[in-house]
Length: 282
Image (cartoon, rainbow, N blue to C red; front, side, top):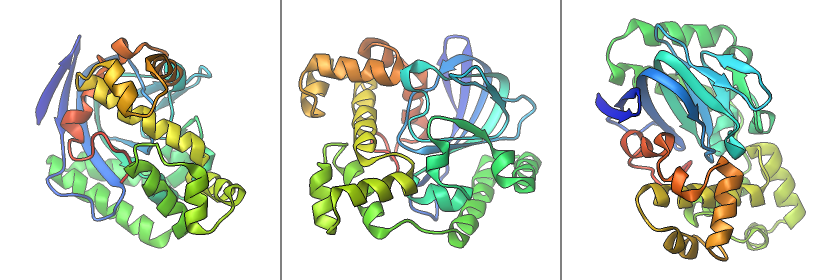
């Protein structure tokens, strides 16, 4: 397990040695001794947090509500920096699910998770407690990843799939770092813009234009964390100018580009998910 230190928090980070058997799933293991008010930065994936340690993570929502333990969060959660995570001795497997596969695995449409954090118990019932017990019974992180992956593969095989046209449009948005034009995507699949918008929104949880904006933000934010200058990032990421990038960063995080470049939640990505940074949800 590798270490990542930020302020008083010491993160232990572990990554699977093998990719998931299901496309669109990435995992990492975290042990954080003292997690104090960490800003949740929006990400273009559904996030599944499987807590099994002696401590318990706490998610403070924008509405003042709290969620403890294992949770699920929709794409883009944390806009304007309004969602915080904290806790002591937090030990968990964190999974990022492409919206294309999330609905089948979770048993609910990502549209039901828009901007909210939901207790996994509410979605999975007894299955949530069972996976928590199983993760706590094994001591090796690779075994925990294998348990999680097997569970997700079973649920994905039993669940419904999204329209191929919707999946194709999502992957095109991701591959283009959010710069794909929605009208052109609709034309390429032979759908009207209205039909693509409706199917995309209902099946993936957010409309295609917002998805593209979130993917573009994520790409730009990780380039800032990597040390690239804001002017260069703005030009390469398709923003009109540096001010446009600044407004987008503030809208999504509640912080300036300079502050975002120091965000531990983003910096740890390079340790936990190096093979998928900066492109989300493959």
